Amino acid sequence: MAKNTICLWFDNDAEAAARFYAETFPDSAVSAVRRAPSDYPSGKKGDVLTVEFTVAGIPCLGLNGGPAFKHDEAFSFQIATDDQEETDRYWNAIVDNGGQESACGWCKDRWGLSWQITPRVLTEAMAAGGDEARRAFEAMMNMTKIDVAAIDAARRG
Image (cartoon, rainbow, N blue to C red; front, side):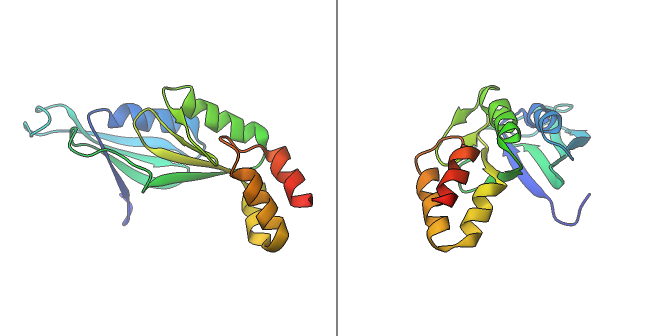
């Protein structure tokens, strides 16, 4: 296990979430599924308690802790994409699997985790600063899923 791991609290479906992430994103995998050695407040002996997995190279631990805590936008995964095809692929995988769209490139998966599907062209425009960043930012503010061509056009003015 990595020295620093992101721990994500799930009601009872950490394994399903981890397997979805592993199937959806490159450099992702489920490495271990651990079962409870005895009963606990939200589960029974033998239930999946934790799942060790990697999402796009980031080590994570899914904990089936029960319904006490819910995910919110204070935490999100940000996935950098190279083009519209890659942006669409990740966005659609999340939204079409019971997730929901939000604004400015954000969406939420069916487990309530937030994702920012961010084309590099947008990140580069923001880093450029000045009018280029302002135009790209203003274009983004009217989008749900990011439109790479529209960001490119906004960058050029």
